[in-house]
Amino acid sequence: MGMSLLVTTGLALPFRCAPGYYGNPLLIGSTCKKCDCSGNSDPNLIFEDCDEVTGQCRNCLHHTTGFKCERCAPGYYGDARFAKNCTGTVCSFVQQRQAKLSTAWSTDDLPETRDV
Image (cartoon, rainbow, N blue to C red; front, side):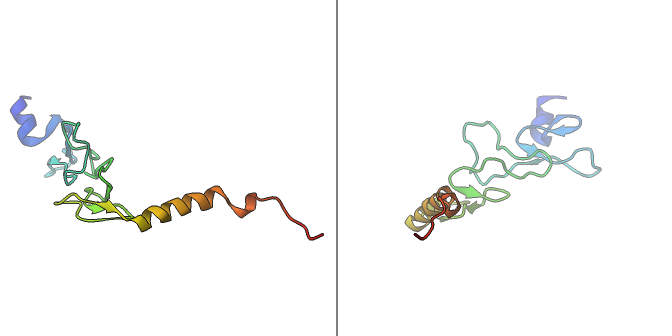
């Protein structure tokens, strides 16, 4: 199998897709499709990182989430796809800190008190 076949079809081996592609070439009529993580995957990787069968992106960066890293993560707002400007709010930061503190200091952990 030549390099041009790899580039144009996304096939790495006769039975699986090349890195950066997903699909199931064993299914009749199925092809390998290029991963689309909305540009929110690791830029140090040569190919976008997605599940080789479903195409769901792994390890969304820049405070993004979603099947294709297309939305801002909870507590962040902005445009994950085009402007790539997911920004957290002070309120979300405070809520996250309060949630961590409340789980760290549960009232169940306090010693029992008695009236004297």
